[in-house]
Amino acid sequence: MKRAIFFLDVVAALGAGAQTRTQTVLLAKGWNAVWLEVAPQEGSPDSLFEGKPVDIVAGYTLPVSEAQFAKSTAVNVQTLAGWTVWYAPRRADAPLSRLGRLTGNKGYLIHALEPVTLEIRGEVLMADVRWTPDCYNLVGFSVQTPGGPTFKQFFRGSPAHNHNKIYRLVNGTWRQVLAPDAEAMRAGEAFWIYCDGPSDYPGPLQVLTSAKLGLHLTETGTSNLSFLNRADHPLAFTLEQVTAGNSDVPMSALLTVFKDDVVGQAGPAPVDFPAGAWTQEFPAYDAGAGVTLPLALRPQGLAKGTYTSLLKVVTDLGSVTYVPVTALKE
Image 1 (cartoon, rainbow, N blue to C red):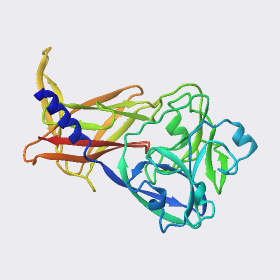
Image 2: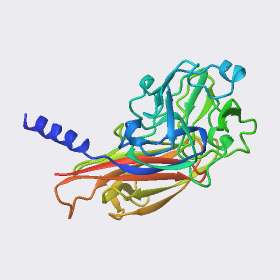
Image 3: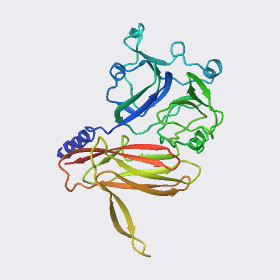
Image 4: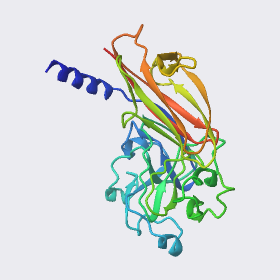
């Protein structure tokens, strides 16, 4: 019974913290297709856009057929099915609002009355793209700014998406990306892309953790952080701990050491990362190859409590993945 109580305490502590960062969203006048990477601390549209020149926000919940783009490429959330819409309180149609909260890892159409830059502070979630097969999906991905990959570079490793059935919003009109090898993806941008058949493609580099919601570190045991190259060519990346707005989490990678010319392990050897911000480069891995890092908390000197930070993974293509880190010191 005591063991069960301890387990529940650990679960509660790991869920207590929230890893946050600020996403900068640049809105042009008119309609904008935005991929919200964080779950806003102010999730209510009334609060999030108070005092901002934003009057309509729409989220999409249904698959899209190719017919939508063949018949009408203009944005129209009123006549097309599947949109849940928020209207600013100052508008006469505000009582028709049905979008009560904005969430992370989701695409939205946002209408601005004038250009504005939004600084949205929110919780970081593990990327979780769920493709609906044989239809268009409204998706977006974290990429470097500037320096994001082209659509071709990002999707060439996935047969389901390696095509030009891609639409991005330009001046209020959905325009097909006819040259995927020439157009770069942008951070915070949502676009329609067709998924040919089933797919679980997450991007050029797949980042996996032992727990679904991120990396959980305790005083005992290890938690695995894995990297798999899903591109069709060698891929290198850097791993960085981001502590701005979060905690410092001292951790170590427990590498397996072998004796010279002897079959058998000499035991794990910890490679310590600094407690604060740090960056570690990784070599290029071939297509289909990768590496797993068993990570452990270094509890020495830490007071009892829960600590949170972020790991940021950046590939040499310019794709980005964020990994929430939660650490528990009993």
